[in-house]
Amino acid sequence: MKYRVEVFHKDLVGYKKFVAGKLLSEGSCNGCMTLSFDCQPVTNSVWFEPWGIVPQIRVNNFLVDPGLAGIDLFDHKFDIVLDKDFFTRYRQQDLHYRQQSIDVDDAYIYDSVIGVGNLHKHLVDNIKEVMQIE
Image (cartoon, rainbow, N blue to C red):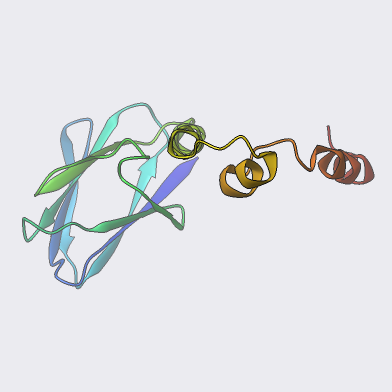
């Protein structure tokens, strides 16, 4: 499996791609760049120019929050681990912080904000049965 990482910012002009500390590529760009990474449990680093910008990051066409994604973001680079569990960890972090942010006993509100309640479990079970999904 490969990961496609897009980095964009209006002022972005250059990049360097490192995998496990080894420089693999570098180049110039005009506001955005797309890099491909293998799925492996190593630290991938993307250095960007100019320093001091905060680029947005997409992984496989999904805009990610650096904090939830476990991305170490610095003023000149970011470090990211793109292993097979990347999106599982991202979803778990998202749910964890959503659950921490709401303090409500109402099942309807909890289910509509968090999206993991059991309010409509019978409907989900019916859909799974019709689609023959376990």
